[in-house]
Length: 81
Image (cartoon, rainbow, N blue to C red; front, side, top):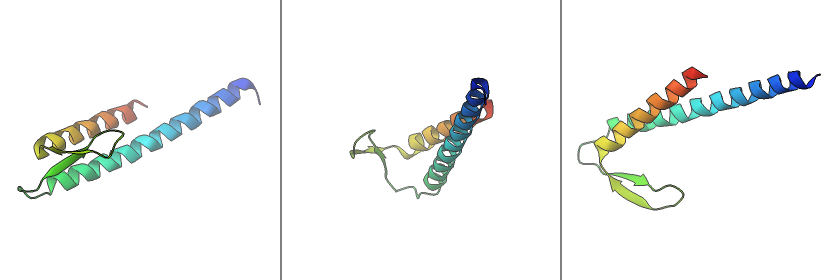
């Protein structure tokens, strides 16, 4: 095999891995959107701070909209690949 063929295979492999990762993230975000949509009005939502175990009380509507935006962003990125 030539180095060009190896490079093409590496690129294809990385592309497939990225697509799989995006699909997983999209699925996770859709589950979060579904769960947030089905919460009763009086329920509280907590958001975890990145890279820590600290949780903060968050607005349910704002959290839901940010999850929907994330799904849209991930879907667009997947389609661009």
